[in-house]
Image (cartoon, rainbow, N blue to C red; front, side):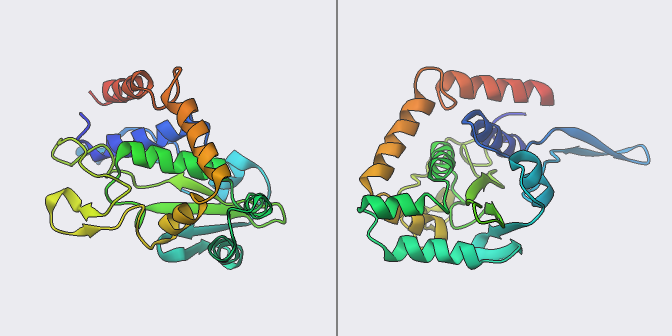
Length: 235
């Protein structure tokens, strides 16, 4: 029932992303019985699938959904690959290029998604455990969704977070290299390219100002209140 509980941490990360003004999967807590025999408690949650996306964003029933390794979970990867190729090949310092990037990518959502994972020091991300999706329509835009964030907020033994998401390190001292935001997976490449843009860096600073100050979603008070509320539901 404390922060070492991976179910609580996963749900906490998703709820904090909601507090930041983004769409996130909503979960709850249940006790599970089979024929009167108690099997434990679970955290059922919405999944990043077509019905979830349509219910929260509107639009049609057809969506492109991408996960780790650019694997397709819905639709196809044509728009996804085109966005990644454009960002990787163009000079993001140019205002016109950055404006074009904002057409297929919700950059505010991307920054908020990065910030909640950076704040939580999620050690098994971003090379793992992520989802992105867009409506398959001319104005469809890619957004990222917190998923499987039980690696946030420290070790499973209740130890404090030790991961610096901006550099590679060993996962919880286990001797396994964890390439984080300086790695070569999809999210790190998007981030390292975009951070060359003054507009992106300004947006990053603006979102820090919004979320970490003046009763924002990631202030100590809001995070503590969210945690205490969730813990009380599990006790």
